[in-house]
Image 1: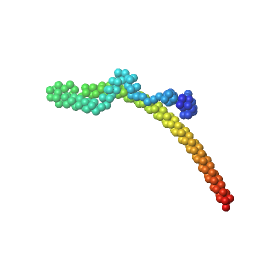
Image 2: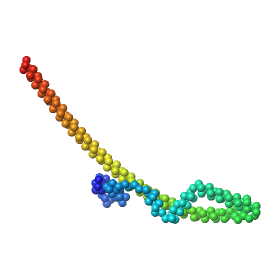
Image 3: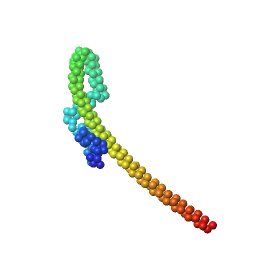
Image 4: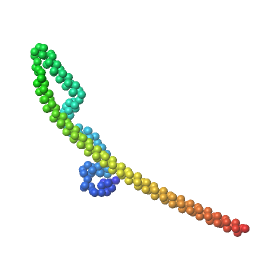
Length: 195
C-alpha cells in the first residue's frame, strides 16, 4: 500500500492537513517500517552531566535511604549538642539549634531547584513518551483498519465464489432433474406403446 492509497482511504482531507507525527506514521506504513523505538534511550542520550547529576540527586533525595540518613543525622546533631557536649559546656549549636536550622534551610534551598529541574525533565520525557505512544497507536489503528478492509474484501470474494458455486449446483441439479423427467417420460411412452 503506497502513501497515496493510505491517504485516500484514511485521510480524505489530504496530506497537507496532517501533523508531522501523522505524516511520519503514513510514511512508515507505506514503507512498511517499524515505528516503535526506545524513548528512554533516546531521552537519556541527550542528557548533559548536570542533568544526570540533578536526576541522581532528586532520586536520592526522594528515597527512604535519604530520609533515614537525614533523620539519623538530625538525631545525632541534637544528641551531641544536648547531651554530650552540654556536659563539657562546649556546645557549638545549643538549643534552639540555629546552626542546624541554617544548614537545613540551605539544603532545602539547593535541593528544591534540583528536584524541580528533574521534574521538568521527567515531564519532557513523559511528553516524548505520549507523542511516541500516539504514533504507535495511530499506526496500529491504521494497520487494523487496513486488515479489516482486506478481510472484508476476502469475505466478499468468498461470498461471490459461493454464490457462483451454488448457481452451478442449481444448474446441474436442474439438468439432472430435466434428464430424469425426460427418461421417465420416454420410459412411460415405451411402456404405453408396448401395451
